[in-house]
Structures are given as C-alpha cells and as structure tokens.
Length: 340
Image (cartoon, rainbow, N blue to C red):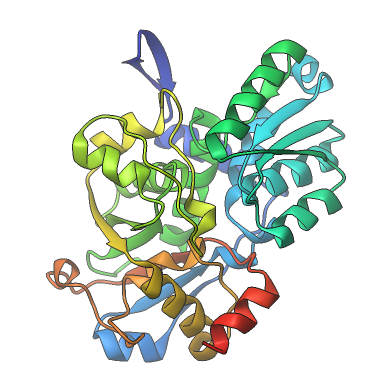
C-alpha cells in the first residue's frame, strides 16, 4: 500500500499488491463467480460481451469480498470487541454473514428506507440491526458514534483500504478468466461510494482493459464529486438502484483520491434505463439482478431496452465485461416491473 495525504493526515491507500493479498486472505470465504460470454449481446453489439455474475456471490453481491477482507485483517483483540457497520443493505448483509462465520458480534445501522427484502436477509444472518430515521448520512453518523463509544471497529462499506482491496479481487478473477489474447476492452462497473470501481481500477492499471464506471442518475454523488473535483453532497432520491444511494463519506479519504487518479470513462444512466436493464436481465438472460447491480447493463441498452453500444465505447474492438454486482431484488418489485 502507498501513503497519500488526505484531509490533514496520511492515508494508507491500497495498491495491486494489497488486492493480491486480499485474494489470498479471503480464499474459502467467498465464491469465484462465473464470467460468461453472452452470444446474443455479442452479436448485437459486435464485440464480445462477457457477464461477471457477482449476483451469484455469497450474500447476493460483491460486498462480501470487502467485508471478509476487512474482518479477517482485524487483530483478534479488536474482533473480540465486535464490529459496527452502516449500509443500505448489501454491505450490512455481507458484514453480518462474515461476522457470523467468524464468531464476531455485529451491530448494523441502516436507513429507514432500507429495502424490506434486504432487511429480512440481514436479520436472518443473526446480527443486530438498528433502523435510523432519515437517510444514509444519519445512519452513518449513528454508526460512527456507536463505534467510538463502544471501541468497536467500524467496517466501512467502501472508504477503507482493506475493503477496496477485497472488492478488487473481482477484477483479478475476471482478468484470469478472460482469453489472454483478447484485445483492449472495457470493464463496466457500478459506481456508488467507489469501493468496487477503485478496487477493479487498481487491477486494470496493469492490463490493456479500460475501467468504465456507471452511475444511476438518482444516486450519483461520486460521479458529481469527480466531475467537480471536490467532494459534494446531493439530496437522496428514491431509485430502483437503491444499493448505489448514499453519500461518499465525510470526508472520503480512500476511494475519492483513488478514482481521481485512476484512468476511467464515466457513464450515467437514468431510472428508466435501470428498470429496462433489470427486465432485460430477467427476460433475455434468465438472471435476477437488482437495480444497482444492473447499471452496467443499462449502459448497453438504448431507449426501449434494445442493445446499443454507447458512442464513447465504439473506438475499441476488445471485450466488453459487464459486472452484474448484485442480485438482491425484492420478488414483488420484479413482478411489478415485469407487469409495467
């Protein structure tokens, strides 16, 4: 890891060696998820389209990679005091799952708009859950206060070097699975707090492939911050891509500096495109993908849900890898979308 100044103090930023170390550490605690070539999308887009099915990961999303790496890196004495986390759903479930496996007490703070299905899944892991009135920032404030007062480790959903390194293991997996002779391509990754995008971006720096982040326009705080060159806040809006909602930390010391440095293309999709992508994944691909996990696919669909490559991606001929980062979609919401 390299040291970089941030907000008045040094911050230990992860690097590719940290990602490789995370791969060794979390072995046996996460699944190696499939990377599948999709012939129909490849034919339509005239580039090989590969789907990284992280929607089939333990706990239903990529979040377990970072959570496992962070908890496993804690000294035994810190683990014995228990951990605290704040999340809109997937990270909390990942922390609860890993904590249960390791015998660690976990207290999880969630905003009051948390998806009911995700809340039920978190509680099923046996962790204690506190619903906080208000949005993500209010839940984060309470989690921070509890962590300080109880001397518990805070397992941040993205702004933590170990979490970023854990999420980066997804990038190592997909590079190992892609044909070695593949020409330069693009890897489409959902963007929220930036843990997954930064982790994968670190891995791609050593490869011919380009990082393409995709934000939902109703959950685009990191995208707006990168555009402004400073950390900004935005009001929270209801969105099917609720897994991408929330702020980027106050202040953000890891993912924002990394994403400012890493080369990437940034795309943004609207709410209708997210809905179309979830429907397309189910009807055309036979996959259940939540809104936040489907934004990369949404970027490859034109109005009406038809496959179409964005203009900015047409300069390359190599593979297009779409990371389907989560599959925790409420069945009732899926039925509503299919009956739209």
